Image 1 (cartoon, rainbow, N blue to C red):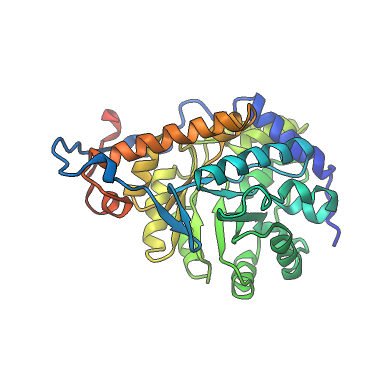
Image 2 (cartoon, helix red, strand yellow):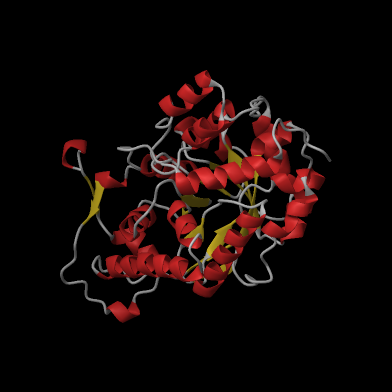
Length: 351
């Protein structure tokens, strides 16, 4: 199939990568909500640190830590090189990885290799990704299956991005009737289908609507990290769109709040926390608040731009902190962290 866009897809992808690496795309002063919580310290944990485990599983595959390299990029030579750096690090550390939006594969088949990572990441969970809105613009179930087959992913993520599309030059904004199409696709695919936001979070209304669909779970992608409204404001030549993107850069549901909403709406399905999560402490808080896994993008993208070793160093620092938090809360594993580690809510004036 052919998808018509107002700009060449490679230009859009290259713009996104350049802007995220070079510009300030996290609005100053915007918090992800985890600052409102703190752990109780256990000075007598009655466990040995060497016995602490942060292992888990995702899509039936083992993870050495509950981490996912969040969806970022693909579709250009530079993006492909970054993807391979990230995939190599993910394989070496035994964590999962999500691909950037694969829509460009349907527009330009020559971009497919930038998303094909199984040769260097044969064992880890890989998650495919395309905008849910494309189901309203001609992308078919067969197209989706082809993306899955070509990249050998274990699951597919549909991303929701109405705010980004409203600011993006020539954005796709026909969202009517999309929920039913998502449900039908979930019933048709042979792999798990998840739904995520891209930085404005999943609200109670949205999570409730999604919970009525036969999807495998959700990713919060709340406020606190990269603002794609702000990213698009750097790209548009329309002054009114640019101003709207800047004004709405803080729009949405903070990650911690969205996580609590999603866990309540999806008590027995997968909930991935993301959106401005930067530290091991925030990862631990997300797990304690009910996340099955945590996805990080921005810090790892900047590290990957310098090579594999900086990505490994970043991941090691995160997991070291996470293990220590389990130890000083008396938690042998992630289930115990969620079950008996005490998180105290802090009023905003004391956060």
